[in-house]
Image (tube, rainbow, N blue to C red; front, side, top):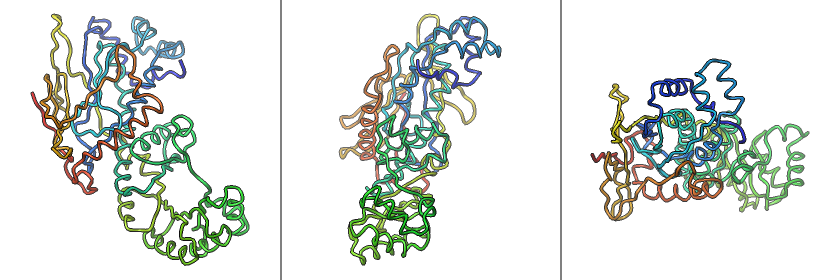
Length: 434
């Protein structure tokens, strides 16, 4: 075991376990479902992310001596529960949406089939991964769409918890980002890394040319020089004087990016640096990227707005018990009826209804039945865990590459209204078949 993930949970999950062990219901076969009731305000679709991380980190959901001692010392649960947790290992089944696919309200993203005791303790663990990763992937996908095919690098590590930054970088990459400044994400997930110099490097030197000369001598003329520490126009001239017309790129990190990019492009062309690329940064989001659509910008660097999920701390996902077996072994759908928090009980199936051109028309959820499927429709649920063993398709670098391809396919199915950045309803309706 590496580092235990078992205490990445809430106390009430273990106290429910404790009570269920005492009253004999802990071994009841159950279905737990992870879904969202609604999309965040202004969003027309969501992106499923965190599947691979959930499967990988579930392997470390073990209660070792340190975790058990802490629970005992703090009298969180009884000795009976501690004994159960000492041997905890998820041995059930799971099925759900593939990483990188799109989701809509009530899409059954993850269903765990196990007994109550083994499923209830995973609620916070599963939600913390799916909620954050999906929030980042969802806003990253909107940015990729707004960028119109131009590459975007993730540069937001300093705006997030250090480990959330690594997870967020992975999610953004699945949604189509091309690279990241985060080296740990590069090491863990083989995501391409990028980065050259910040304003501090220019300010370190007696003048801008000295800083540029040092960077070019170290990194070669293919590097990207940051030209807005002082006067941008003079910065561009200094960059070309030092590096020559074969300079790889210049970066702009301030000012009115639309007009400044045009001015910089004109100046580069005037100086003969027609092949020098322009990268812009400076608190970009999907709206500013869309505003730059007609500008002569070659690539973007996005920070705060992507690793914070575009201001959405989570995707609003919940984890609910939807069915249990009775004493006769019959599956019984269960659901809560709380105002505004109702969920549909029962085992779900799901297909994406596509027209003859392969464009999505609806998310069809079968409740206690298989959803009706036309020849064009795409099934959405796949096996994720079989008798405790994760399906290898979703793990490691292979899983990430697969998720990127799945996302690209799913986006090609999205109707035109789904790409709008204005507020509106989900791109397609959710239809229930019961």
